[in-house]
Image (cartoon, rainbow over all chains, first blue to last red; front, side, top):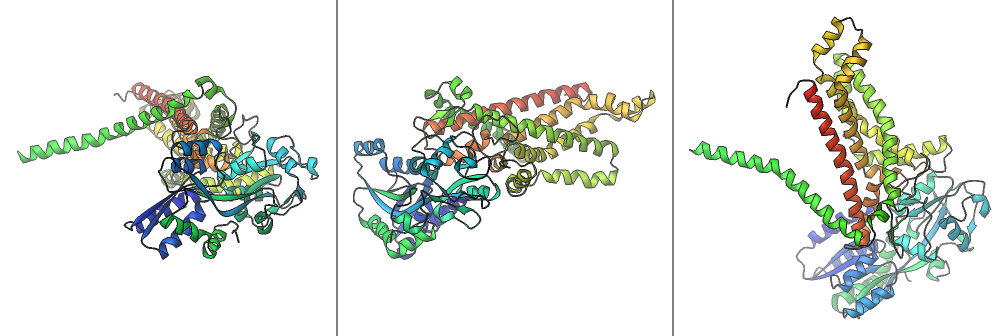
Amino acid sequence: MKKILSTVLIVMTMTLAGFAGEKIRLTGSTTVLPVAQLTAEEFMNVNPDVTLSVQGGGSGVGIASLNDGACDIANASRSMKDSEIKNAISRGIHPTAHVVAMDGIAVVLHPSNPVQNLTKDQIRKIYTGKITNWKQVGGADKKIVVLSRDTSSGTYEAFAKLALNDEKVRKDALLNASNKAVETAVETTPGAIGYIGFGYITKRVKLITVDGITCSKVTILSKEYPFSRPLFMYTNGKPKGWIKKYIDFILSKEGQALVETAGYVGLK
Amino acid sequence: MRSKISEKAFKYGFMGMAFSSLLFLLGIIIILFSEGLPVFNTVNLMRFIGGTSWYPTSEPPEFGILPLILGTLWVTLGAMLICIPIGLGSALYLHEIAGRRQKAVLKPLIELLASIPSIVYGFFGMIIVAPYLQRTFDLSTGLCAFTASLILGIMAVPTVCSLAEDALNYVPKSFREAAYAVGANRWQTLTQIILPAAGSGISTAIILGMSRVVGETMTVLMVAGGAAMIPQSVFDPVRPMTSTIAAEMGEAAMGSPHYHALFAIGLILFLITFVFNIIAEIISRRYRLKLGLGR
């Protein structure tokens, strides 16, 4: 749903800004998409001479299209893989990373669940199917219902890397299409465990600590919280001209305020 | 002279429109094959259809769609168990028992069910039905094959009911009159004359209802749970083929094996519903002949 809405918004902003001068193309992660959109809109308001077109498609798509020269900025919710960097260099592209925001992946349970904390190891075992009952981690005798994101989402990829050491999620995990869907499912399922982006934490689900550390702005920024990750924008070489101005804008106080509006943690 | 030209223009104009569907169908088939078949450079057909693991983004990826096929079949089977009795029951009531005024209200109302957007059904299932079933049956989760079957079954009722009722109406009055004339009572007439005569029309109704269920996307995406596992019970979460495509197509890089795999799933889905529709067409043709309606 969010995706459809955002596509509509993109099309609208594109047609509205139609005939402006220079054009900057951003493609990639749907996790970074809201940051890119909010900042792009504001940037275009201030600078009517430049058009920014923002597209989703996923981190992999963004990086591939940067390497193809099909976009100017690749949004990515992960750092580039070695194979992608090699591919870029072989095409004469020099990807340069800019951290634009921080995100934390919060682990949430149903409010009735007495469990307060899980270790990284316990979370991995729950998600890979080695722990199946809450009593194995100090909870009630109840089957664990594992909620995950679709395997192609950036949040899934980040969680798989940070929490699961790239092991596969158990087959009976319920895969949901959005953060909101995970939150709703956790809220209505007593035995549930799920993970959602920092911006999607609500009072209707129970946020637990991981290795004793709460998921908060402070712990995400200090990277103390184990499931925190930077969000990137990649450019070809050092940014110049409008691209540099845009990146500087995101990193400015105003841009970082928009990052927080989008549900992520600002860098300052 | 002029009228002749405009007559021709109209003729070819409408002919173009009539054949445009064929063009669309052809286009879709070509794209499905050309975008779907390349996946078999990555996995062979047996590993694709018979594989039990669907991990399209892992390294290395696994493209086994057996859990997805079984998910679709499992949900469809359940939905048919719900929509056949309700659909046929209401068709029989409308045809045999309901008076003219009752029928004038009931039939449009049942058909109205079909006009509710599937996302509304999905929303209803996700927010109301799933939590209710979860509490009532003490399930670990309400987002499962059973909930999906229940909702899809209800969604297919109008298709089955409306087509089955039409089939009953097509049975010539003379059949019934003849049955009464030889002394059959109402029940005997219904079970031994009307139902067998309308049988193939009713089968068509059921098959088209099935097509609708198999192809439904939004609702299963929202309520079936989305776990790519081989279902062991009706309360297991499943990931039907349609919802897999819907959930993953947006993020699959164009031209990647994952992208082609999703098209290949679409191709298989298309073949399934295609076969259903052909069977329905054959049966209904045979039935028209049997009743002496010709063609």
